[in-house]
Image (cartoon, rainbow, N blue to C red; front, side, top):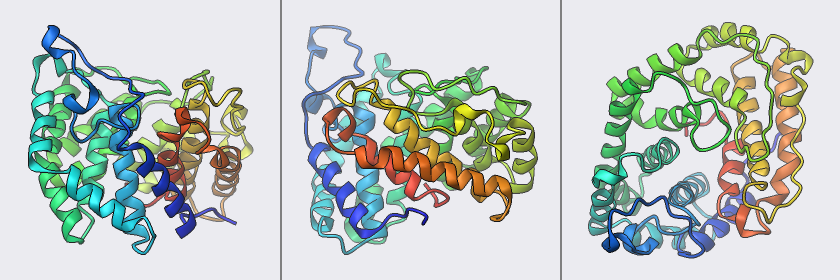
Length: 339
């Protein structure tokens, strides 16, 4: 049976995120200091996104909370989620996050992973009709607009794609950002589409030499998920048939076998649980672009289920995974839904 976001999953994921978005330490800052006055802690630097071990994980922890509550409005965690968005997403707090971003030393801050997640959070909040969440969406927009502009400024300079399985992946960032910019900044969406097609459009016969030891994304499959978002379905199917011509037969085999996670207390090795979950998301996105009874769609869905089974039981247990893995489980369970 296809795994979906049930109320039990929604409540469990919400409880995990609520346990860490407000937890300041331990913390891994992405912070350039230009002098002694810059030696500040996470909450002083980021009055909203100071928890969850790092800035980007806190952003997508809030995305998770907003998403599961919108999809299951009656979960017990709902009132706590509402209160958190009301008390954290204030105008002064957003202004402080904006001020940090405006520092000359922050030009490369969270590029491009955090940029994409912030736009995904805005897109999710914009779907809410609840007054508190709608107010949070409105207050966040000045920060969101800055990140949209960062994409607009950076992409013309980005001559080459970043083909990694970690935070620097350009394909993942564009996929995350697409839902917001398509309606809020169509010119930036057009620029993203142009870049995706120029970077990846001629790719053929992907070898898929992966995973690397600390991947949480498949460089091969996230490229396909990105192209699915920026191409019409028929064009995507043609592109995918050349990109992974033997996928229906389970080749390259490296893309069809879940990764083994040897030590879930090691933050980098724990990335491999995220790889399994993000692969499940990508395979479901790919399956949805093909006729449901086609061999490729069936193989893709079966592979997604295998990857989910390998890592869904491990989203909790150690903080190195707990502070972020539920987000990737949610992506897999909600695949083919708007970000």
